[in-house]
Image (cartoon, rainbow, N blue to C red; front, side, top):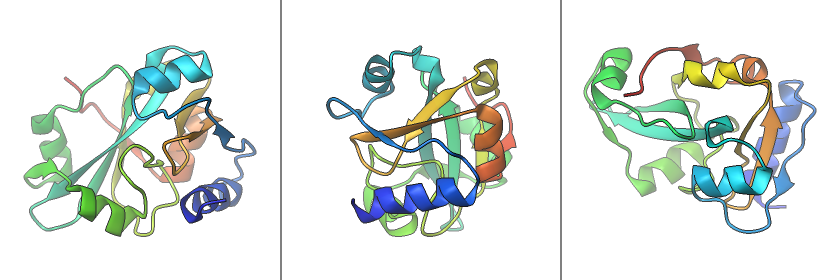
Length: 155
């Protein structure tokens, strides 16, 4: 088991989430691919989108698969100007590579916001630290485990 996947498993266990990551049939680097693999609607896929603030810190936006982060709304929530986080920064701060960023188990936690669209589902699926693994959970457990603030940041 990779270090990234092991961190996610440990974070799930620590949060009391009993669902274990499953390996996909192929790479699941897009919400559409993940939804197809899991057999669910694309909006049931949790995208972990990271932005970097001018202060240097990262902000994590957990977005329904079919939604996009509105940078102006995200900036207002963060309280500072944001830009897409660079690949090297994401890996250094979270410990995950782009395409496998999980919503929990980061090396350094970041302020986290959750798209209210995810609350429309009984279950959602999120990346589990690799481009081939994901886990299922309830939106409420995801909010609890990540400490996310539910907020409108999509457009």
